[in-house]
Image (cartoon, rainbow, N blue to C red; front, side, top):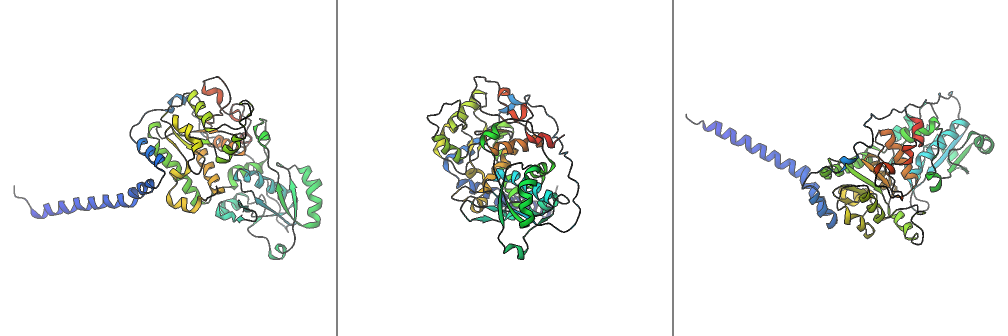
Length: 417
C-alpha cells in the first residue's frame, strides 16, 4: 500500500497541536500551582508532596455515626412587610473586628430599626487598630444583604449628608435585645434624637458554653443564614482553599478535619499552666492530638488549623498527624498578598469560618462564638459532624459529639424544618 505523504504530514501536525495544547494547559494551570508551592514553608511543602503518594480510607470508621439525611430547609416565617412611609429616623452600627459576632449585631440592629420604624444604615466594619474602619462591601455582598432584608426593614447605603454632620448618640444594648428594652430604654431616646448608633454587648464564653433551648425570631434567622454572605471574590478564594484541602486528602477520599486552634487561643493557654485540665476552657495542640488519637483518627488524616502560619506550638500535633496545614500553605499567592497581613485580619477569620463549615469534621479547641457559628452553619448544611474534645476516658466517637447537636439546643434548629 502506498503511503500518502500528505496524510502523514497531517497526522504529524495534529499530534503536534495536541502536544502544544497540553503544554499550554500545563503552563497556565498546573505549573503556577507548583511554583506557588515552592514558596511554602519547607516542612509544609514536603508534607504536601508525600500526601499525594497513596490512597487509603481513614475516616470510614465514622460513616455510621451521623445519618445520611438531606440538608434541612430554612423555614422560618418572614416578618410581614412594614407599611411604606416616612422614616422615623436612622439606626447606625459598626460591626466588630471579630466576625463571629456580626450575625448577632445585624440581628439586633434589624430588630431595633423595625420596631422603631427607622431606616437601617449599612454598617462599616472596625479594623484591628483604633479608628481603623473597613467598608462593608470589602467583605460582604451588599446586594445580597439589602435584598434579603427587602420588606423587613428599609436599608440605605449611606447616611444623608445633613444628618451625617450632626452628633449621633450611642446606646449600648444587650445581645438578643428584647422589645421591652426597646420600648423603655431605646424608644424615648430615639424620639428626641431621631438617629442612634447601637453597640451590641457580646456574649461571654460561659454563655456560649451553656446549652439551652432557643426561641429564635425570624430576624435572627435572616442574620444567621441570609443577610451576611461573603462578597463573590472572597467566597471564591475560600472555596478554592477547601478544594485544595480535598485534593490533598486523597488518603481520606477527599475528607479533612478542621480544628479551630488560633494563635490568640494558644496565647491564653500559656496562662493556664496552673489550672487543672478539667477546668480549662481551651485545649492546646498536644491535647487535641491526644484526643484525635484516642478516638481512632488515622495518622494519615489531613487536618486544617485555623492559624495564619505555622509555629512551634503546633509541632505536637504534626508529630502524630504529619498532614497538618495552616492557611499559609493552602492559600494562593495572590490571596496571601491581599488578605494575609502581619497581624491576623478579620478576612482570615471569615475564610476560616467558611473552611470549618465545609470541613467533614470540625473540632473546636475553645467554647466561643466562632464554635457556635460553625455549628449553626453545619447544622443547616446537613453536615453536623462536630466533635468536642472533652476530658473523658471514653474512646467512642459518639461520646464527643457537640451537645449543640445531641441535645438539639442550637438556635439554628429553630430556623429549620
